[in-house]
Image (cartoon, rainbow, N blue to C red):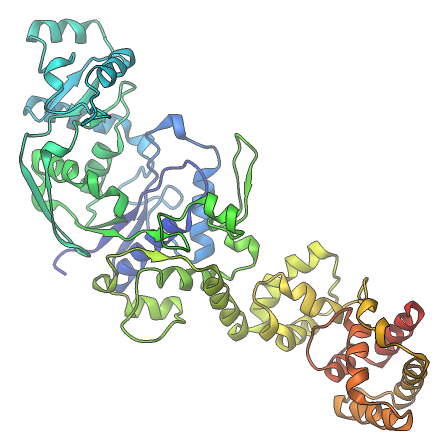
Length: 508
């Protein structure tokens, strides 16, 4: 590439970060790192009415958790600071004025009441939602329909106004999308978007062009829902004389509902029981909490992995990718045009694979908070790592370690005696009492030796080992789960093994 690669993620701080937003970050990040470029976080907070306290910090924490640390941002700064658009407010007005003076934009003095009247007055069955466009603008109160003296008087009186782009009538706007190829729009289908609001703040349309130019952005990746706005942005780059500096664009496919019909939303997650936000998010206005992938028990590596394959592959059957592999293999031309269906079961599969292959010490640090919350006390870090190594192949999400490993640290508080009782009798009770004595006499921590003791006693008591294995498992762990029962007994030790069996006998 001829120029330095500089990409940006430019979210609005309006709430939790949807997994589609994180995937946009990921594709930006991978492209930048693949080409030795810069990844910038820019906060687009020009719409103060939608600003949500805490949302910017949440975005930063999410990127940190995913391991996608910006090279420039409001946190770390950079050569093109500030990186919050609200702090760049004064720089936008001059560009709006430039557009007005060149005849590419105009002042619009219409009040909210007048705009509502316009929508009602011009509504027809063929046009149920009239837009402020080339066909309507001459009938409204703006600097194109009013004479110069009246416009000057309104401006002198500080009459509230917005600045709108003057979209040309019946002009084809064409650009090349890195994913979709050549894309064309007829400007007659696009309304005169507001560029500068009455409070002096720019809208997204003006701010994104100005900031991408000033920050020397080389490539802009965003969701396909922004495709209809592309002709406005292409014209702004042209009208401001920057067309040769315009970034290459890629409009990413949507992440779809599991049934493939429509864009995945938070409501879908609530309805179907899975997260759609990267991390827990509590709306400060409603106090409504949305569970995140992190808190549900996903590893960040698995979360990144499951996101990247939603709309991209490397051309092989490989599914598990580390971040380093993704940076090496990522190519924008392998991003799909069509949307990708979200499959939560597949997402959990990715997490299980990452847990299974993760370093035990690393997992111990992730599991510890779940143990703390469940009241499971860990006194020996080395023992925790050993137990994680034994149990991780049975865990899909991090909270699964509470069930699959918690009994190694303390006796189960509940025992599924209901699964033992139907086939329980005096002979089996006598067997387990004898087993406790035999285990205590052996004082062995060898699983094979414990199994031999067990089998010898079953023969002595005229019982079948298969009838006794499940009751013993339930006595030790509380339920029908866990690794080999003699491995469990050897790991927790003879003393605990005998104590748990004796306690269960009192309940049967």
